[in-house]
Image 1 (cartoon, one colour):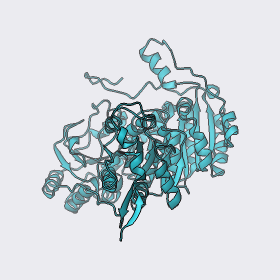
Image 2 (tube, one colour):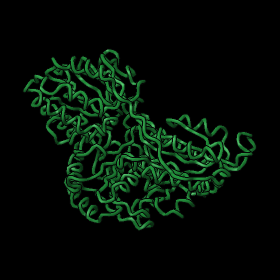
Image 3 (tube, rainbow, N blue to C red):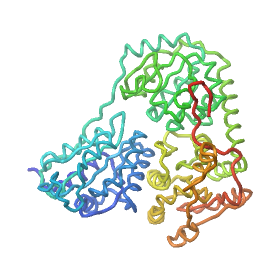
Image 4 (spheres, rainbow, N blue to C red):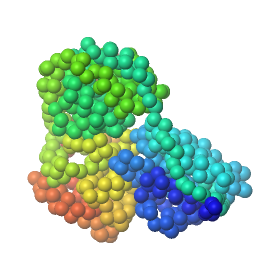
Length: 551
């Protein structure tokens, strides 16, 4: 005989079956049945964020680090709207994220009656920021709808999926026998395409792999190709697929001049699981090796940013493994390739460090204090754009999290989600004072969660990169960049957070070491006003104009 439960409990059972152990969000009258079911069953930890955007960022980073499904629960209307910016970030990053949001009572749906928490065409809004969005239309179809949403979120190319569930249907009774998740759809590459790719690569002596976030799971196959003599460069999302201290990788030094010079010596490139984003390719004008072959789970990626000589639709792990099978014993590599790559990597790193000026010492102190095993989470801030996206060697494919969409204010909540996904490891969070103020309420979430996060705040009393852009492109006319910045020491004191300050980089190693020793939530303020500016004034990602000049 079937067991009778309400829809909300059925949904929570389905989340448990999908391996969900942690969820994020804010309780409200239009999602209380779901959160009540989480409480009653006691198998999923629910972390209350201070804003829906923060909750979605936390779930996003949790999924990136854990490799599983991230879950955020919001209310409807304004609350669902609050989560949209973070959903855009998850969509940009290709994160498997499930957004459960309430909806008003079914009899009032789509009638524009100004019912409390109603939003006109909420489903349309969610479709715009999600891989897919659904509305539960009846109690009988609720489980199937949620199951399909989970399958879609996790199936490559992964992405965020939203479901709105009217409050009356959350409470409705259904009969449940057994809860099982649908199998994922993994696109299998064509054997004929792999045969053709292998044949076209057999004459290559200096082939290069460009790896993106869609190849995070392909590390074993990548190492097989490295053993055959391939070299590697990664996007920012692909960092750590090959440990960044490995002699076969350029790491994420992908668009620096010395790397482009190295590319000119390569005779083929395979782009796997990467969209070759504009900010990492000089506005799509970075000179990449030819021929260019592309592997992607998204068929629409073919030719989107760069023309490909051969496109293979399929899972990057399956494709690269199949390619390695076909190339064993059939490659004749240039013995100088590895040495040339190492020289290019060293030159790129040296140039990056030179641009930092005195803050080169800060990155050294961070690396020494953190040791070999840490998570590296970054907001959009000057120091990250100049160096954080490339420096700090990552050793695993899920060790780095950053705001791929370029929006500031997401670093702190993402650090909380990352730390809770891997609680025994140290999480470093690099942010700026401007970005931190966008999500400053989540410091309370950090304190409450006890997550092992060290927040490093680069404080220049405003929006430093915007100042630099105004100086470079707007005749030095500055406006709206100098913002009132709170005393972070007082904010931390009010929350019981440990606080440290660095106004002399000679003390940075000692201070950072002390903060990490606490093995809990801490905040370290780097006083840029006292220390001084960077050696180079970064004014946005470099782009190349049609004449081939970088600016």
